[in-house]
Image: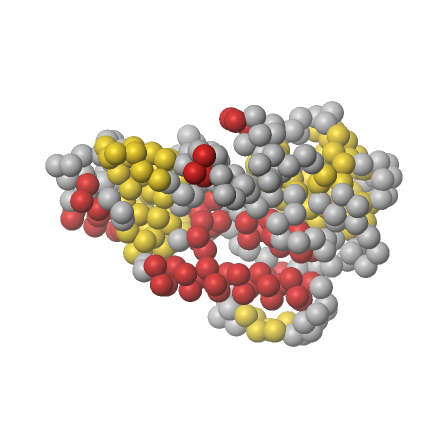
Length: 330
């Protein structure tokens, strides 16, 4: 149904990732920004975990060979047959139409969702691309994609209000982190440094991990090495050079560097959208508060889904942009 005409940057098929295989050494993978990706799926009437396209910085151009309903998530210029169209909105394309997605003005990852999702052979229960293990591969010009069947009627024209669109323009952010489990490998001064300094995302960062630069985090006499221990997306390792590395969606499942903390799941998508040169501050949080933030994020996404489905005419919700925003249907 879709032929890729131009692929200027990393473009992959992703869904919510592989679950239950970390014990076998298989990374979770999946959406780098699960918040934007799920909303993109909701806009076209899909479940939140449906497969879609994730692009890095610059989007692709493609030709549709059948009728399709699609939506773009990201702060980006989009054109259909050369005519500008709005992101965060579902659009109907017919056979022969050409979609062109530009370069993100803010953020690092953008998403293209299609009603029905992308049809693919699931490997270990997921369509997510993890190229290092041969679980899928990055897409290139000339590739063709097929979509799963979906009723398109009523899926066009669904729009996410501007007040609910995530804003990734900030060049410095704060994220919560639960300290541990290897705090005995750090001095009090090292932990204080980690929680008080700003760290810069480096160009060496990728889907596997974000390497940060900044003031060195001091290790204790135990040093940077540990007996290999488990890692999850969000784990912050500190190797011997004292510069933290945050594990991301394609991270390995175990590692041998001391772990100073874990970024709370509710904030990991914001960190994923930081461009090289942008900064992050870590603030200590508790497991309970991190759990509450995750529940708040899930409730926000569910409210957005109901609103887009037309099943909720009005709701009030807190966002990062404003204390309270009210919507009464559009």
